[in-house]
Every structure is written in C-alpha cells, then in structure tokens.
Length: 371
Image (cartoon, rainbow, N blue to C red):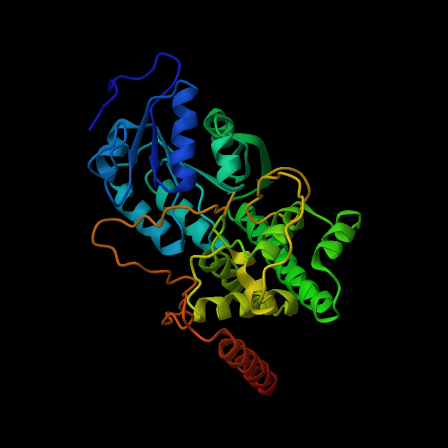
C-alpha cells in the first residue's frame, strides 16, 4: 500500500486515525489537506495511504490519535489494546458517542499511561464531514484541549468546550434525544394530517413558516414524504443512543417519556429488519404511499441536531465505523442492542407488520404500567 514519508512534517506532528467509516475517512482527508502527516488503522484493511499493520504500530508513529468507533465496547477495547504503547507524548481524542461513564473509563485507561485525553463528541453527517464542518463538543484539561485544538480545527466549523470528561458525551446524548423525538413527532404529525385527507405537501409548507421548524425537520420531512430512508444516521445507532439515555434516566430516577417513546419506535424498526436505514424511517409505519413531489431547500444533515442551519450523520454518528481490536467480539455490552431476525423483507405483508407492531407497542406499555 502507498506510504507517505515516515518523518514528521516540519510544522505538524503525526496524526493517527482509527476507524475509517464515513467520518474517519473524511477527517483523515482534511488533516492531510492541512499538512498533517496522517496514518490510519481499521479493523478491515483498506487500500489507502499510510495504512498501518496494527494499533501498536500506529501509536509508535503518531503523537495524536483520533478514535472513531461506534460504541462503548469498541472504544474501551481499542484503548486497552493501545495502552501498552501510550506514553506522555500522546494525546488521544475519543469521538465515539458513548455513555459518560464509558468516556471516563476511557480517560482513565489513557491517563494511567501518563498520556493526555480529550473527549470530542461530534455532530454532523456525511456532507458536513466532507466539507470539514463538523461541530465538536469537547471535554478535558485546559492544556490538553489547547494542544488538540489544531487537530480538531482541521475538520470542523466549531469547537464547543463543555467541561470535564463525560459532560460532552452527556450533551451529545441529550441533543440526539431531541433529534429522535423530532423525527418521531414529525412522523406522527404526517400520519394525522394524512388520515384527515390534508395534502402532505401543504403540511410541510405550513411547517416551514412555523416556529417549531428546525434543521432536522427541514431535512427529514421531505425524505419521509419521498420514503427516502438512505442512511445518514442509522436506526441502530440512534437506538443505541436512546438506550444510553434510558439507562441514565433509570439510574437517576428520571421519567423520560418522550425518549422512551422514540426508543420504542426505533426498536420496532429494528424488529422489522430496518437497522441500517436512516432513523427517519420511523415514518414508514404511518405512510403507505409516496406523496407528490415538491420543492425543498437543499440542506445538509446535522447528526442528531434539532437546530436550524446547515449540517454530520449519524452520530451522522453520521455513521462511524464499528472498529474492534483483533479477536474482539462484535458487541455493545454497555448499551446492548437486541438481535432480531429481519421480519420486514421486500415481499412481507406490511399491513400485518403494522398491526403486529401496534399490538406489541400496546402490550409493552401495558407491561410497563404494571411494573
């Protein structure tokens, strides 16, 4: 595979990128354009410049290490495998959307080797990543954040300092709660106006002038009407984040009814076999026929954002690569996702699925009320 010169750039230290999903690939490209020597590693080898043979080799070459993996288990296992090769010269930037406790555990692994740790959850989907317009929510010590800032600036339009490690993860989960709820509310609103015979395009037109209109709705409403569920931020990853929120709520005695409802609808999509569709596919159960085409503004997606303005996926979290160390099991033990057989293939009876899903929902809520 092609290799760049192994010596450091005169103005920049070497940067390692772990995880070559949608975001990792884009970040590595922006770093190179900014003049950083970049080395990469992924569970599955890729024919890209400076692909190294192991995590240990990456740590030996690079001073900065950015980690783009999809869940708690993958993040902690990656750092456990890296830890033996870390030292005080390293700064590790963790970009996964995970539970705050998992992020703090990740920091402990890194700091036990006298390396420095920066929590850098991100928002923005594939278009934002490709344009270098991610938004990072960061946490860590002032010194670590200051040194890591040039690395983050290479792929972002904003860096928002949240506080101590774990707090940025809490903010990222909270913003995704609003995004998931917005998509679910939009799907239900479409169902209501459709049932009453109102043209759906008229509803979308009305929403554009409404105070509740947001960047998420601007992107997702047209896609819902077109039944365009190509993933920018997948059902399985949004469900993972809602499960994290639900677990935090349980441990703090919080009643998060809206989040629970959004989680249940995402889980239903998982049961139907749509794990890899965009999370806006929650509209599928309500809308049976494609709506008439209509003009829409061109917008980028904010991964998990319910705000206005241009957008990352899934997550977009657009989608980060699920990168696991060698011999690691594919797991999400911190926020386990149930395994379901795909029950909604192309030839399946969708009416039957809808009725079954509705019955499951009623039974689930009845059972919850009895607990």
